[in-house]
Image 1: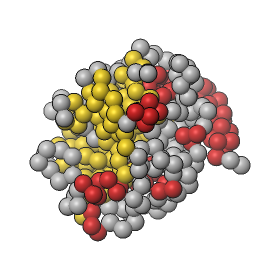
Image 2: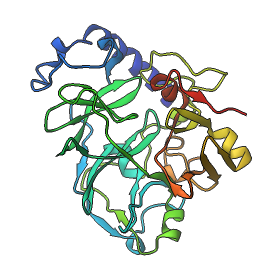
Image 3: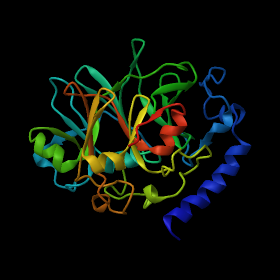
Length: 322
């Protein structure tokens, strides 16, 4: 059976289960410390089980790093999430690991960071883990909202929406994590620019690192476990868009032009990065290119996410079309 058919069958089963159990009454035994009386979610039916339970997808904390020159397993075209904070050695977080773990809790000297990747939305964003003077540690709840990962903090068991970094259930409801500048690029690009940089070492977990468990997902017509509206203007649901604030530029437009300067930012596209959600072997995925977003010459926070996710979380957002 093709992966799309498998995902569709799983989605149908989980959707029926979710509709019957979308209520704090069914979650309280697993989440006894979560204050479900505080929430920004308009309907509990928006939250569905993604299949794995709480921590079923194991987030990582305090990862190990090796020097760029010592890394031999990562393919040149494989995507990594790059974090380059002022005055610090650049770090690469390979998507071959994030696709299995989704969250890495790390500290770059004095800055506690959460490097996150939701495969179902292609959303890869980095947050400062400090909120109101407290440093939080994040895990994967096993829940989805609009097909996007719901994270939780281990300090209060509050739930957080990964794509926007906002607390949606519990004590931190309404709080927003600061998004830090980071971007996805190919391993070859990171290595060439940062020969003395650091790359996250392979985690000590029994996973098929370098393999994609979502084969052909980004060629699907409809997202996994998503019941919302599809994007407007005939944009395919799983087309990639570059989100900056509440604006979205279709990747197809950027690829055609190579560079766009508007709305106060300059966005560039360059070939050479493989999709992590295409072929079984990540390094063999089709080329989706690397995006950089700058303002006044400096990298700024952004995300390269699927169009349906932008429409779900920014229904009044601006589509930057030709």
